[in-house]
Image: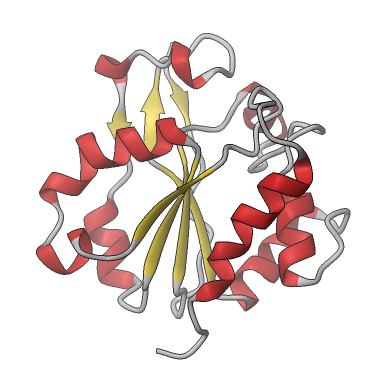
Length: 171
């Protein structure tokens, strides 16, 4: 059975795109990005953008939009037993429509990947079909915020994730 991801969260003036691979089981069940209680995504976003990570979900999404951050996943649909990226059936992946996304969000100045799977999937399945102007954007893999990625402490992840604030709000 295919899992289907969520629509992108983005205001028209977004400058930063953060990409995951595909929502995990807890997120799919809650119909919320990064819903697993031990996922560090929302605590990190709250700290670096100055909002309470315990706000209601809709308000957290609004905080990202106000900070000109777009949030999405590389895969629109795929087969993945469980939540581990290593379990994604690569032949089953249907990527999201990034050509349309970049057309509607021309101010995107950088792409950040939430972990290595998101980066690998984007670079292999999406990037080759995008225009040169998109292929030359700054792209950076950040440590996965997943509780399965325990190689770094929260503070270490947060410091690396501060890179998303290096791109000015103007544009």
